[in-house]
Image (cartoon, rainbow, N blue to C red; front, side, top):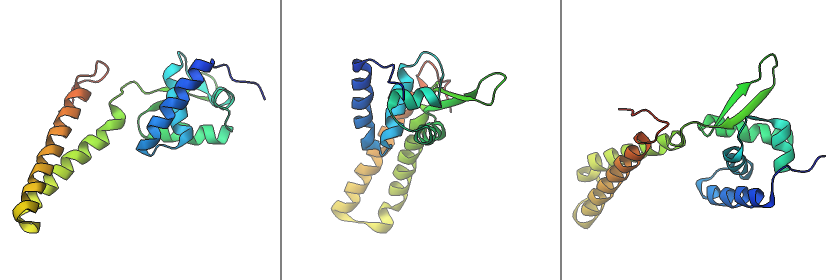
Length: 154
């Protein structure tokens, strides 16, 4: 098996970023692939991914599909071939859109339920929690909307 074409600094970056992404429940291979794709200037195939990250082709494929399903990567076919290559997603906000929507849903649920489920200090705590989630959703949506690669969504 050929050795990686990555520098020690690139490997360190990929591994450190993967450790950070692990807190978001991203599998180690998908997290490492995410970092790897951020460093690539051209689309890469499974053989390159497998070689450079030291993982099997099947693990590379599984990681790539997971990233693709969350908007962190894009798959492309190569002209005149069935070969698929991968590149990082165009919009860094895409993977966060589900979390932003969830924050809004949580804020709405809590606000609509406060009077039915709590009173006193618990009701005040839920109102603060709902307001917090609402502000966080708005702030994250504003950042996503202002991304140069993302047209503003309403």
